[in-house]
Length: 276
Ligand SMILES: NC(=O)c1ccc[n+]([C@@H]2O[C@H](COP(=O)([O-])OP(=O)(O)OC[C@H]3O[C@@H](n4cnc5c(N)ncnc54)[C@H](OP(=O)(O)O)[C@@H]3O)[C@@H](O)[C@H]2O)c1
Image (cartoon, rainbow, N blue to C red; front, side, top):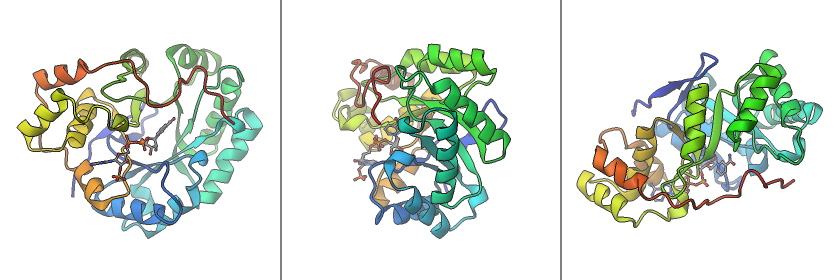
């Protein structure tokens, strides 16, 4: 079985560097995806309230051929549950829907700057952690100023900042500040909607290493040092996404992929995204 490296969080817990995301996977499919992925060696499962499949993610966890203690389960507090009371309730509801008595990681899904509630939401995550409902707490889509504000208001830095990263949107500044603050970066939509699969930098590295373009991009993420959570509903792709520990991109290949930066997001701009 693949031995997936662990990253150490600023609270002393560890997080697998590679996992799976379950966004846009329907309830009928989610249990089999989760249990198949775990059977193949995945230990980190990234969910969220808004994905609508927390219950079926929990079903997959119960079907998986390993005990819950060996898994790292993430969920996220949605925008409409920002604020202390609503976030506290959201965490409890997620626990009950997934069917767990603790979560490994809870993230504030988006900062929603114009609501200006994320500091109160953060206090709810801190208290949920202190109550033993959650092991680690973090944020998603936060910029450096917003992370600084959480730290200055509460004294607690997020363990993780999950952000959009792909070869055409590398988010280098946020990655650098996360690192400086001891916050582990995790990449969402790591394959970038397929937009760089045909780029010469990716295709050439794939040909040289005998891997697919998707495997090259995931390997690029690993070599940048962050955690990554690709999604797939296909067993062959789940297996391929784990098969990225037996090759290395060389410095020239890393530089060629770095040069694909185009400032092009796949997802919304976190500074204006406020959807309920
Ligand atoms: N925090 C946030 O705001 C946020 C936002 C977006 C996403 N996320 C998280 O990040 C996770 C990953 O992002 P994502 O789901 O948007 O996209 P992604 O993982 O970048 O890409 C998923 C797509 O890639 C295909 N794929 C995966 N592995 C493949 C392989 N080896 N070969 C060929 N195709 C492959 C999948 O198709 P098949 O099913 O056919 O393999 C699917 O269409 C999400 O599931 C979610 O957990 C978080």
